[in-house]
Length: 342
Picture 1 (tube, one colour):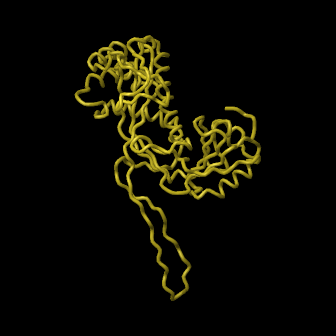
Picture 2 (tube, helix red, strand yellow):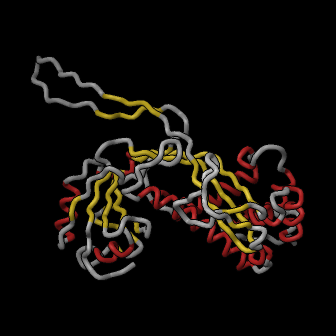
Picture 3 (cartoon, helix red, strand yellow):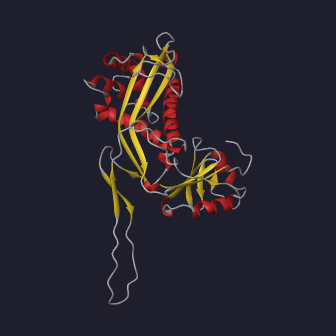
């Protein structure tokens, strides 16, 4: 009889990270840890035995499958993964975008037909990367309790989802050339909300220049819950449907704001994934506004993972996005329709 272990999606990638972290990045030692813990036939053990020179992002096969599965879970839980109809494009590849279309005319019999032209702009999505650095204790990483692995998996997924969603939706994020993309709401002038959601939604739609056939609403769970009622039964704190269009609820959406986006105008590019681990690194223990700068040598105090009995797990993915048509995003700010709190 052959036993088959059914794992949550993304667990093989998590186990691979744990084995590497416990071995301090030594692939051979990590393979031994994986074999002893999950069996010689487990995916992490097979991947670690087969790795050679180069980086994990150079590998195909089972590592690519494990990484793809993990980041598929990240995408599924992120706002991007819940938007339908956006355009997937390769990174660093020149593409054409229509900035204006042709026009049609009624023509009198025997008269010449007017001519109109399409206008195109060319460009490419640069290869940018997003990184999630999770710090776990050695005790948690070494625990044989399956629940411990679940904790690590959930935390790795959570930090990546939050980083993507906040960068995607924060109006203050104007992007940094060569580092991160601007949010889809950056530069959008919001409409001021009133106390009447029906009137506000009407104004929002009237000022939206995108295609309503591919429109999606985005808001926080509290705003979504405040819109629920007899005249809007399809929406709740998990999103749903609003005025016949999909509605996505995310805690990373701007507070008291309703966003509408034409998803067909959103281009998304994704590249390889990478995983790195260490138990000997020195880490700046801040969630954001990091002071450390490797180019200048300046920064704040660092914490030794070895001294603190901790392990660092760094997951990276190449990705970038861009709104390719003006007017494809609009939003209302200052919505406060009820005291519901997310």
